[in-house]
Length: 499
Ligand code: DQQ
Image (cartoon, rainbow, N blue to C red; front, side, top):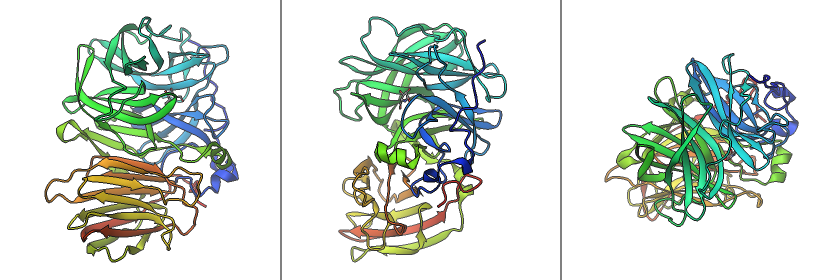
């Protein structure tokens, strides 16, 4: 085996009090979503529940708050909520197949030997590489025979090739590599191996059509593909790349048989603009839990000035939803973060004026609200609202369109940050209330509706008093059936991020 990895790199090992003031004092830095102590993070990688510990690796540039030479940062949790930063797990090795970066990949348990399969980058080559740990996932040795696939399969006219995802079936190991077929669309290439070290290419499991817009557009190339059983179907998750732009995380549920995937139902895992490159694990309780990278909505200068960039979504539990859709709920473990509950019952919300809730305010909040649409044409909640309403982020339910919107066009008075309206389909059966779960964490807003359909956005209110929550309705009266709210605590021991 090769030499052990250096684990004393800057970044992930920084003590909280050694972080630059810009990081400690940034009001936009989330407090209960996972992020590194400082600098850049993107994709979650190598997720694994190993002997009672959740291990999270992630794409990390420990040298700057912008994307750069990729390392694998590492953190561990026993409760899915509180994380301990560990030394960097993988760093580029000079003059090797990963000399220019250790890009995304996965983790498997090879009969008791934890093994990472990642993308080693050397120049234009992006090839699957392998590393193993014999000390409980703390340090990693790279396989001297890396890369374990010497080149992409010939003759396919591929658009990019990276992000191995590996799993075991009764007859051996299988691997997907994200790619695209020029002029057709995104694809995931299937391989098989007896030992993780030598791989035989089989075929694309399924190729999308980049001309097709409905039900979801899947672009020209797929990053970070992942295939796993969900209920009695298989779930394929891909991150849509097109013309060097990152778009959204799409899913398909369907049938996987004889190396081919046949989609039956398609959708987006999150309808906002931020959630990308998600990866899931199956935990020791049998739950399929997924995290995505939440991209910033501010520019490179602002990220450099802040000293950090990128955050993970909350852990989302996936389950089979109606008609082949995917159900998504926040992990119940998050309830340990709740402070004192505020509870409101039965309230009519009329077009007369917005109802600013007196005891519900803050920038680290969970809200669970149930509405009956009544006669209102649109209704909803505004959050991070300044007293004069000049800054506010609006959750809008449109009864006729059966659609939920997250409107960040007034979320910030800073003209340089991203502001937009994003929509998610949200059909309600006759008599079914709209049930919203909202998590506000400084610059993160995650919205769950009726246990399916997620909308996540990044928001950057400028005013310190943009903390209010209000209810509103137009075109008629909506009924608020109940609203519970809790302030949520920081997940870090010294309140990292508190200002
Ligand atoms: N991020 C990684 C790639 C992956 C992309 C590089 C997705 O491996 O395709 O940081 O965000």
